[in-house]
Image 1 (cartoon, rainbow, N blue to C red):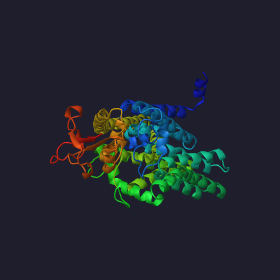
Image 2 (image 1 turned 90 degrees about the horizontal axis):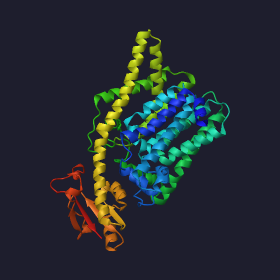
Image 3 (image 1 turned 90 degrees about the vertical axis):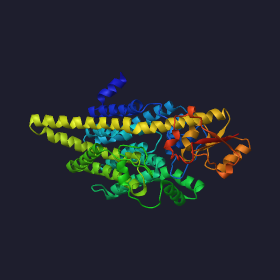
Length: 497
């Protein structure tokens, strides 16, 4: 009864927002499936605080925040379903927490519409329960921007609002410092350049945003000194791992992956279909309409969200030489607010027309929005998931082979760039040093495996027995997607214990 009474006290837009957030949580379970296996990057994060799996190699570009988010589950179990269900709940709650403050900053109906536009993207659905950082940066950026906007509207500082601003900034910084820096720069600049408030308010708000970034990045800086020779060297290593150091312009690559795949590095030839380009162009048009037709405080709030979203986009376009749809999630969620404002403005303008024409325009707009959601579901189910799942199935088959050969004994695996996910599923440690691999085997401490795409072994593994992978134990031609070279021959597993 108490829950029902509280529900009735909520405004209609907030009720709809809650429904959208619940549907957001359910959608990946329905469209992707709770048994979706873990990808390479996920296994790295999941293995760091895990009672059953050795910690994988944690490289310079990564941050520890996501590992802390999944730790309540990974400390207890390696279950795929448990992790997926946990992250589903986390992202649904974060979506509500992120969008709710905006109900008082822009016209209330804009907020559930923005949440719906964002949640129906195939990228949002796919990464809605993935152990990947971008969705959490996106949902953490929403309240950070909202708190700055809200405080700058008030002549008196709110201690609780400033504390929560620092918490939101620390949250996104702990997960991905580079994204957090882009957002924080916009928030600090917005605060310092704001009009209509005292200098003290501007400085304190900017300081709170900066403090959140510093607190969240502190762990990253300490680890940089401990493991990577300092922050500057860590940044250099991170840039080198991403590709050619220096500035880039990868906007074309980011556009090409609007319809998948989930990663497009060198040698990838992704192409986005013309209808999808039309959809995204229309979405960009709605953002412009929303900014142009908003007024006063509403425009300032939407402008701040847009600038923060574009700052994250610029970070990836100019520093990363390849395309990945998840990179744009913070941009999408922040631009969903002006896009929703633009959509509401179009509908409001249509309602002022003659009744038959108004009804036609409104109906057509709703059909287009529903069509957009349907098109995103189609892209996910028929263009993205088949390629992702075929790779994950192959990884699982290889992991079963390794696990069967290892038995209950501890094991270590070297499989190059495809090793992390296989090692995680097989519950093995991963290495990239074949010399160490041979030493571990000779000392009898571990069952050691070298998984290769060719029959050629490193010189350090001379004397190992090369065993072709039994065809009946793996999906046929599993190696074709790993740059198979017909001149070398089929892949093989070399093992020694």
